[in-house]
Image (cartoon, rainbow, N blue to C red; front, side):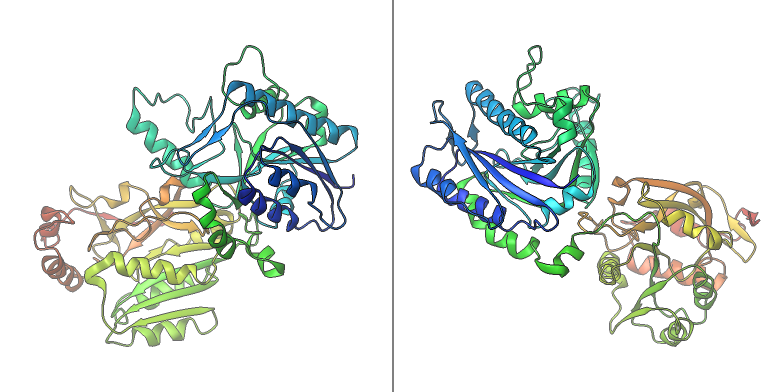
Length: 515
């Protein structure tokens, strides 16, 4: 079926905001589709009505209907003041647009509120999803001081998580909600329970009966909720796309951010399309090894890197001011692999989180698909080599956790009260997700090799094991013990008893067997 889209909006807007909205509509990429516009004019401002009357986009038709405003509608810097009468008038206007589209053989309706500024590729992005009902996300501080929230929800009137009562258990509800909000900041396609304000609706959905009119026995506020409930009952799933967030001019003061939004988020031409076509790939993914090294040439570096070369595609190395030939070893081993090297003149290990954040930032710059963060004394067991493709070539999981075994010699790992890292799963391998709000534990020591909120993403525990050789030689154990005493003398960031146990003369050791 030919793609014919009716772009519709019910408009009661001040001229300054309406100008930005109409300009973004005129700039939409409409290649390989036919688009017309239908505005329902309910303006109080004659200037706003005139703007609709004179709106012209070459190659498109603009249809105008409406009625004078009869119900009050006040907008302040605090909020928008809707009345029940006005809500259901807007519902009727939207249903008029849906019916007009259906009667005139449009393949889709794109209903968009008149206080949004859109990325030019919004329509192209929404069409790519090939679903019946989908919104592009935008974020709004609905009440000053409450933080930015999306126009979508998962359950009920406006809830992001089920079953947890926000009154009975506010902390749990807040934590679980934050996981959803973090996920929605990652470019992707997500099934949701409710949406609105920037929504592409297929002809199939209109034919099935989706409408905005009130459901008599439902008392939820807002026509979008009644639309979404009706869609769900009809068996139509709801989706939100988060690749190209729109900008919401919710308050007059938000006009000041329009130019910044355009400069930062809206890319035109082929380069822009490429930037915003990011998706989780189910195949063809590459793996980048990311590592910090310092004076590792005479330890395990060569063994670790030669093993990793059997399953990685590229490498990012941060050399933390080595004074031996560590860098030369790296250059030799990676001579045939895409290799990024950052050489620091002064060591930053005394502020580990600074070093780890730098490692992460330099790795992200290389546009990796997946990132494996290993230390220079860590090596996977051999069966990882053939199985890496199955881990990274899928779309359901964004990270993997593994068990790390502390070796006390070449054939045994330690297990006792203070040495049981292998009983827990820790993240090593993660998908690179542009847009995710990574957060670090900013401590001088033991900050973690990855952002602390990485497990807010979908992850899985893997059976593949990691051998940690850093404790396997007596001289290395003594050096680490002395380093911890120097960097963390009060055991503020670690366990004093574990530090002392490093020098135990008769630890409990268990024989290692490859699986």
